Length: 310
Image (tube, rainbow, N blue to C red):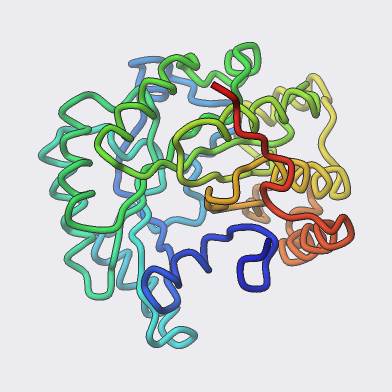
């Protein structure tokens, strides 16, 4: 099975089929915070999260949403003059505010020329009924998905990384979003401290049997000025090599149903902040290696997926 020239259901191709042109995500910092940082749950945050709330490549919160979008569009328009854009609310928790403020910020993004949709990154414990109603409102008038940072299904790891909610909260959030027909993208981190290959595969199998529409497979980065940096220095847990990561990603892709869109299969932390793994800075080499591994195995997304029997 192939998606154009790919062996997995990649996001760029998926969006081109919907909109008929190149569609680019523009990462935003809408000046939100997070209940895992402001003391509601914790004041420490997840141990891997950077000072910018996992939005290191997002725009600056010193500028309005409209200004952030305009600046990024100007940079990209020369390469893709006929491209369209998705406003990606990335930094921190992008449903952690009043419904009125959320409506205002989402509308500001949609009012910009050539913005054809929204991507909203959040936590499953920040989806009260009134927030779901706001998301439902926007889902009915634009292309949209909501991203949930699960990272792992294993409670011991969730406690270690200070995720701040248990798996049942995630499961309930999926059901609430899907009841409103809102597309869901789930984040998993490969290479979390002390997780085995079997642990990671269990997480992949679990989400593959949920009613979700997209997956992000992240490589775990150790960044400066995070709790993970201190934990790594004190514990020296194993960090995946490039070969290990490439093989693991392909193992994961083989288990993910072919209709689920793959939004990410690697990651590249900021060069000035990255501690490990340094090989991840060559993102193109990593992507090419994943493509080669799929080809060498004569494999593709979903080849080993087995739908559960009822």
